[in-house]
Length: 530
Image (cartoon, rainbow, N blue to C red; front, side, top):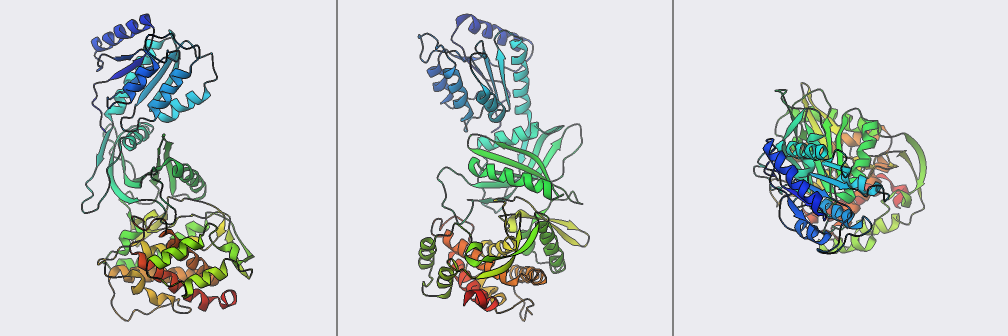
């Protein structure tokens, strides 16, 4: 966004004497060396709304609450015109307003807690001031705050061959506010981590926008260099609310998760978490590691799975109990959408996956499973950060979403299915699901690779097999196979509502994976599938 530092101010005031006082005050500010332009005035509610609807830049807005709705009319008795102007200012996403002051003689006439909340949430600096009481000093402070906002430096590196969107002005605004909330910070050095349209199994909303994740460091003043790596996640306000709740749980559960800031504007939210590990070096995602051609990836995989499993265990208490199979499936499955996606992408409704699913969703057969009081909810290769250490890599899970009680193996099952469906092979003609189909033979825990597959295939196979070994040790292979099948059907059903632009690299692979996982579940758990 990078507004020029020369401060532009909008003052909404209908009375003549206060208007003249504001003009003189800003002349004095300019004479004192403050970098301010002569203010723009709106004398009514409607005039102010028209100005806020333009592409004019306003660093500072000053609003009186008692205003006429139209020019040349008398001021209203209440405070509604001024409150509505503040509400409109908060929605100005293309030209966010850093600082807003409500200066009025009517602050005692109404219950204004909602207005106070908006000033704190929707602007970098917001304040309510009684007319005449040290208002000049408070305006000068707001000018200083607006200048500090403009002084924040944001450096976003080129994404090279990746296709990434731009940051919106509102997202830039949230970044500046996150920097200003950190002691001694003056800017950011950022690079892209990932972009997605959200879940592949829910219908996209036209207003929800994409989820954007950047990785970078806070820049510190006085030559103190930069912070540890941090993750900056932008998403729609509706989803951000749940993400912020989830990270609050993770902060309490996992020592490596540190929350720097969580803020929500009218439409977008920003969540900033900082890497806590033994190394200050730039982390990479698990997806990047699996494409690595070096031999050290083979050595690292057992430790990676151990790290991931241990952190998942740390999220909640595990108890063993018997449950009806139908109650273990994802509760929001839509059978018609699954059938539609299956037909659309080359599947056969008479084949095993759909038939098995129809049977399981009404099954009263019971299965012993480990139930965990708190799970991650969205484990995939992009929200597992890899830290390079002397012995290879350490893995750290982050960016939870939809934290809830669930089958303890669901997170690992989600990781397995997303590893196979969300990763893009070097050639679109290749299928990672087909390349890895041997792991869905009956009771596969160890698999000897007779050929030398590409690094992505080899590493993905070894990671999944390492997960299987962990599950077998926990005596949960039947529950795990059920969860893998359930996650595969979840991904398949999503193609009916979002067949393009979602995370699935090849829609036909979702159909194929559903069939493979169905066959594997039948072989591993015949007592619940017969």
